[in-house]
Image 1 (cartoon, rainbow, N blue to C red):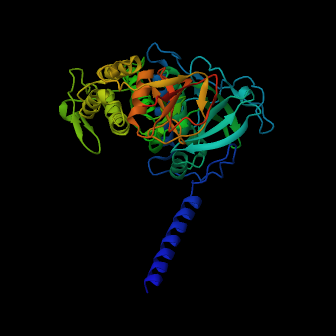
Image 2 (tube, rainbow, N blue to C red):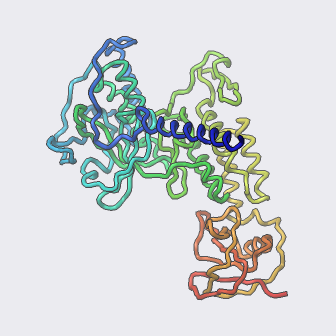
Image 3 (cartoon, one colour):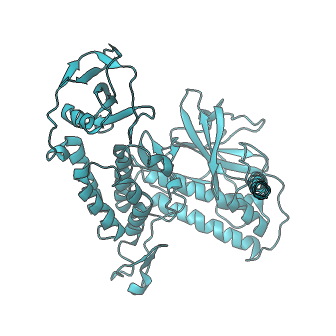
Length: 487
């Protein structure tokens, strides 16, 4: 009877799992869109639930005007009114990318401004750079955009972003207004806004915009593709398994980014959609990649009751300034999101003991919004200085153990695992000095030797392998072995 019940339960679970997988695979819009695929037939025009094409034209105009504000606001790079023309066009005749033809101006459709505007100075890469790309790979998509990874003819890998023809934004708009071209323009303005912001907010922790290309795509002319720096998705589970040094680098990157956003040429910028998926990692640095939901304008108010900053776990009350806007709301929204998505998970765990009080203070202060971004960044930079200079070791006591130095050598095997390690099959850690390497080895019961490599981390610390013995010492000019002296 028990076996029969177990078999029934197992069968039910298997059926449920199979059904879930099939539902995901064959749900509308779940299949990754292919570059250049047919967008499908247009829906029949209709009046729409909110005023038909007049309403659609109003929404397009609002987004167009938003792009204009960001393009000409402030003295930052890329300032100037967007040009109302195609900067890069393609000759007809085949799906390949051809040489640009002279720009043309098209009259407004549905009462909207001319399409498409483009940012001031032309970026470095255009349609010509996309000839003969290879290795096209779908990366992912959101409500509006799809992202692809491609390799340029010169070998460089870049990311291409385009409106997702099977995405939520375009699909819901077509269902409501029945005007595919107008709906594409509405969605593409979000991509254009992001392109302008990437250009205006240039910073080491903002994804680089390499260029863009306008080309005709079957029934929709002037489809926009942006060319950006390629990054790796932020996977929090993986980050929790990395070294504290690398996790601190991500938090420091985020602190520097938020400081830049708070003091940008456009004013204080807030990220309304602030989640790990809006960021990527490029050579260990955190960079924001998704800016179509960024906002510059502060929240207007008539009293403090209008300045409630709401989050799922708690709310904050901010003052209403004499000028009629909520003081610091953009900055503090970013800061609290940094706390709840990054700092609380990545900062304190497995940190050097002498740094933990300062790290706990950073986490607690950002969780209570007791500090602004300036103070938060100053404290993060202090932690970096203490860690990079070795001052965090001043209160540590040396074990006094003696180790014999064997230059130009390494130990090929005799590994053991430790956490967190830079190498999954062994114990590879970073140290500030030889004395710290000795202390680490003495703190591991199985350690009998260690190998100092010529590799360094982003802070300049040496990477060291820790070993269980030294039975297989072999020559290696790039390493130095230290073995525990007998006695």
